[in-house]
Length: 264
Image 1 (cartoon, rainbow, N blue to C red):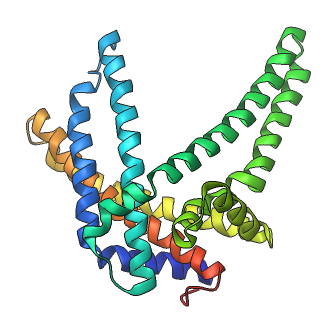
Image 2: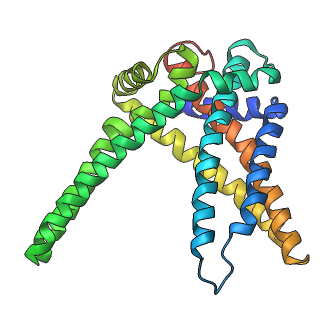
Image 3: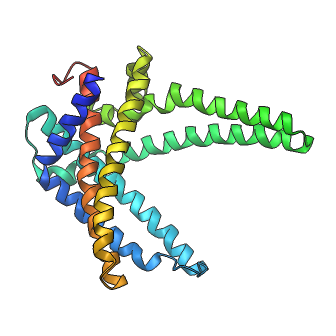
């Protein structure tokens, strides 16, 4: 537990001292937040085919650019944690350098998730024609159990894969292998990774709630259009800062497990 709290503390320290990177992520989030406003469906209205297509294209573009932003951010965070400094000018080069590997890593993990989800869906669907509630309930329980087991054995251990990829300069498959070996030996580390993730989410929700509440008070007294812009600014600022906190916390935690970071 002490190592987890130390990682989170260090993560906030890195974010606070890396405001240049926070600003870059803030600008990125703000651009997409503002650009998404026209795509939002107004209350009481049904989304049109054109609006839906626009939203899908927008989401794909956002994901593709996010991978570049992730590579650049992780590279700079690694530099700061290991060397005590970062050069913001290296953001683009890191983003390009790690783009294909992070893209491939994401595809493989999504593929694994898809296969597991398909197996669970087929299991449940196979019992539906029987019209037996008991059998269907058992099938659902088994499907959930499969999801939990696979999550503990693979999904959670693979959480550190991007950090292995960046810190150790390895390929996609090797990053996944090293992440699995590190987290599963001993297996208790899987629960430590899960706890770190949960704590970071809870902290993010707490900060987001406070900022969102304050922003909501302001937006309530301004025109709706301006209110959306102000909320977008507040959300982008929080996401930019907490994004660095989360990346730094996980990277410090990973380096601590490998004996390369003294804070754990």
